[in-house]
Length: 224
Image 1 (tube, rainbow, N blue to C red):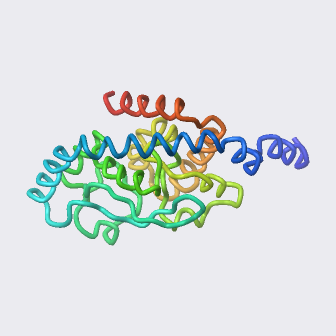
Image 2 (tube, rainbow, N blue to C red):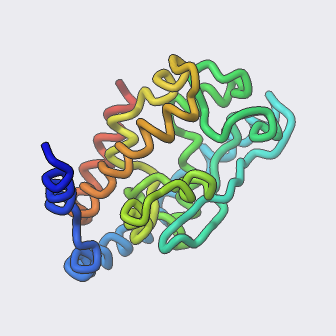
Image 3 (cartoon, rainbow, N blue to C red):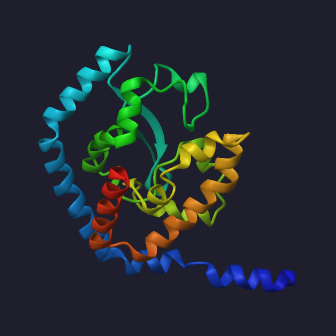
């Protein structure tokens, strides 16, 4: 295959995201309405369970209940994400910004919260504030977003999500990274580009009903 043919193939696969965003304006509006109602209800319903989780975290390891970290959101704007803390204090100073299976920084309670995805639930606060959505590309730290190509940055046109199709497909990501000699290189060169591609596919299909389907797929993946 010639270089010209390769270029043509790439152009055929490329998406006109300006046109796509115009086409999806109504879908994005109803998606946001769903996010507001569902996140408000979710926070009220989970208030007491959150209290029990907070007590478990504080009683088993030193440090705050919540983990706050800068992530990149819609249109490249940064925000601070809410998660239950699952690692020792100052974990980022003691290792990579990605987590591998068997990471020594993860606490005993944190391991359970990660396995059940309960650690992600405080992001309902980010959803209610308009910084995130229930479904959308997982928000990355600025360091990794700086590695995106101009075309890949199109995933920043929508709000990042608590869950995504890529997270369901790569639910064993930590194990993949643990088996790598260079976990960060494996993430940046192999996993991250594939996740971005999956998120671009999501953007073409996104609507409230597809989001609900992915939410149930996430529950099913956690139960498995």
